[in-house]
Length: 486
Image (cartoon, rainbow, N blue to C red):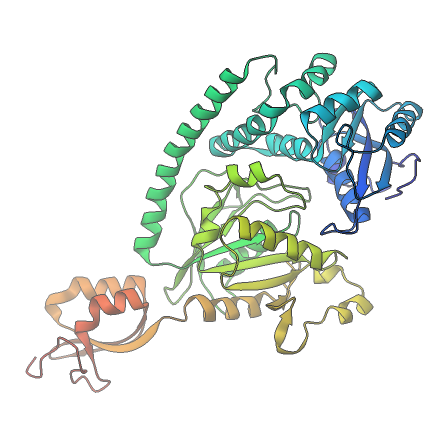
């Protein structure tokens, strides 16, 4: 994106989802950034990302400017000369909102609005605004309102002028939108009420989680940068399991009402769209393979640079599946030139969630969009490592690499399974039925003492039914509960 004080032309790509709005774009924004070589991501990309965020909020970017300095002005964040430059840029382009790339204090917002005469919002308010627009479930709406109120509480003075002048707009809409002339006591009371409601929601999730844990099925969570293709990867996995890749199997819904796209009886897809933060709610899908092995896939909210800490805190309860997961599928857009920075940012958020360091498989998505030359440059190096992770190249659009993904995935999450022989007395028919329904029974032979089977099962059920274990010839195995005379 051009960093000079020039107009930003409307994108030529008319198919961009950022222009799919219900009405015309009424807010015209000037973007303001502060360059610092100590930042985790370069300022040019960060400003481009800010432009996409503004457009995702249904506003139009008409200009952009960056000041390179390390020392922040306490009163106005940028220098006084730059403030006047922004004011002139806004007047020249008929802008009505100024969007800063960093988080501002309430006094900085107030001072900037006084100098420029327009509404001023920061990156944090913008991201919260987008989350408010995307929220579907009761839980996500409560979480976003909590984050919005927590953000606005210390900024009441700064935001008062903006709301009284504009009546809303980007940075002010959503579940947390209220006239901020209300006193702090009422806001704190609302925060307390929301936290209580979220605790009740947590109890429901804990009950659901306990049921999954009792089933002993591994939990696999998809994580990564926003718009990297996590939901597309999940949908492709569900489709291929139903159609029967080399792994084979079927998909079963977890039973939650999550606004999924129902594509018939065979596949319950999760919502996917080419836009930032398309997914805010967690989606669970139980996948059962032909050999009776099963796992639970979880799709999660995407991350972004400078993700507001209060938002991470508010969503921690929803993202607890990431902490509980047996394996993380870290999806990245391999066509993005900042892919390494995006991996680092995702790692940073995972640390905040106490989920960093879990077993992880990196999925280099969108390889179908690479040119032949670029395709060769992102070949996974020797030993299949990329940025320190075991990595696979895939395309959610074409399905390339998904057979290998399934094979690798099964090898990791079902690693604890054991293959044994068991002799089930005819009087224990319920045990035999359970093993057939829940595990892979490979051989069955009816003998005088009962049903002799070869079965592959998880460690939990192996310990539960170890007493029936025998040698391949049907004789009792050491430590089993089967007697020689049975």
